[in-house]
Length: 222
Ligand SMILES: NC(=O)c1ccc[n+]([C@@H]2O[C@H](COP(=O)([O-])OP(=O)(O)OC[C@H]3O[C@@H](n4cnc5c(N)ncnc54)[C@H](OP(=O)(O)O)[C@@H]3O)[C@@H](O)[C@H]2O)c1
Image 1: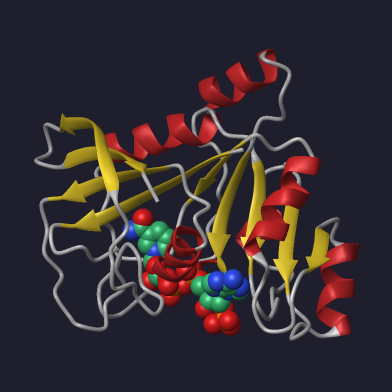
Image 2: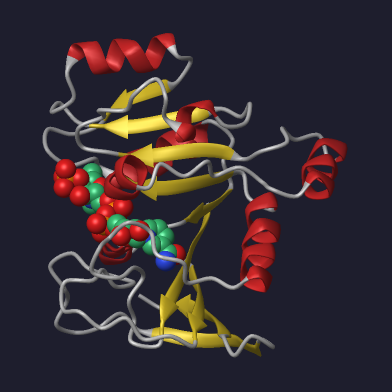
């Protein structure tokens, strides 16, 4: 399976500001690029704090791109995947209600029986994979068994770090906006506990945007 992390960050590496409410970082042209990249995927994955805090729709926005997917024999939207320790989603969740695509939630034994029953009743495929934290390799194996060959992780910093340290990421695509947020507690591309050696990367592509941003694509060497 090919696993890409796509993220938008400020020049100082922040993927949100200290308020952690999903500050705007991408420009309009970057949003269009992300939409095209989304449309190429079999699945889009997010971490629990992004899922519960930002509650993104994670659908393909462009009608033309959705039509192209259908013409290629796919659903209009990729499968949406959430990795969340305690799956306390509500019936109003945009993640659950936007689009018509399949939704898969990987969670842990911390989720209550009621929460799991609610999700299953809402048509979500729910997998309990771990006591406190989701077993990420098992989650990818499950997705592969269900036909997912290309997946994009759309943050946040905790889930990015977890996939990177588990050696499960092939590429990182990062849009660097001409902005600085600062703030020691603002999330970054890869948070978690940190690694001492550093993840080794190889620059594959660099693109300058008219909005002053930069798109860099890296291969993860591991
Ligand atoms: N700029 C961008 O492109 C972008 C994109 C997405 C998100 N964001 C920002 O990122 C921030 C959220 O990032 P975050 O780091 O707080 O959270 P996150 O990465 O969205 O979610 C991490 C959470 O997932 C749960 N989890 C379950 N199993 C896990 C595992 N094996 N490994 C790691 N986590 C696991 C954990 O919940 P427990 O702690 O309960 O165990 C953990 O807190 C928000 O401010 C959001 O706006 C920015």
